Image (cartoon, rainbow, N blue to C red):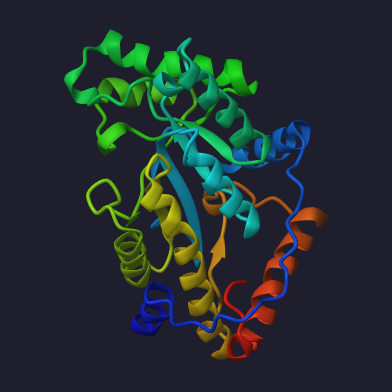
Amino acid sequence: MFFLIFSAVFLGQTPTAANPKVPNDSPPPASAAKATRGTSLNHVPVGVEITGKEAQGRHIVFTFDDGPNYRTTPILLDYLDQYNIKGVFYVNGRRFGGKNPISSRNRDVLLEVHRRGHYVGNHTWSHPNMASLSGPLQTKQILRNEKIIERITGYRPSLYRPPFGLMTRFSRSLLTRRGYTVVMWNLDSNDPFQRSAGKNFSNVMKDLYLYKQGMVLMHDTNAWSVESVPRIIKGVYLWNCELAARGEPVYEFATTSEFHIEQTQKVPEPTLAMLLAAKKRRDQMTAWCANLGKGVTKP
């Protein structure tokens, strides 16, 4: 089945006639985003590392590192809106913390990421190898980035991704004291090294076939990475058609806070909005699967 999906999405062999329009929800206001994230993030454990392998069920989280980039991130945001998917953006303050025109444009993009309901996480100020820094410099990297994210978005981040996946005993202790959850990954696009949307798609799908769920690592600073996102989404939807036909659970895209619930905590009751959104996604997928032979090219 994996190879059929690969051929259909990567080689572009799905039918190409017009498809029914998929309605896009209007971006939620900042106040609504605050309430949603604030509630659900209470159920993400503090002081531990999560990788994506802990998930129960077939859940996938898109995570994007090293941005924002005013050239590529807005394109990605539109793709995610088209499919009603929320991601987690682990940002570096050096991209938007300066006084030059590029920093100003990147700040506007960061605000747009936040406004559209995506979560903004801490990825340090300048993406150093933290293991090579003294304790005070590690502190500066984390807190400087934390403060500027809070100043721009109005919210202090509580998710952290270490550059290169490397941490020290000092940084772990600091992050725990600051109330952070460290989020790693297990579905790697390898996009910094393979500059091809097709290869990035293939890498993620192979890892998904192996692990069945998890955190997708991508970088929204790369055009090829951004262009691979709709391919990955379509690949997952094609896979879902096969799973649904067999009566098996299908894959769901989720934010980190929806993805990982601390075992000792009670899972929050879903709100009406959450239930309606889930039904909408299921209905879209069902309609898309039913029309695969009629020229529908995307869910």
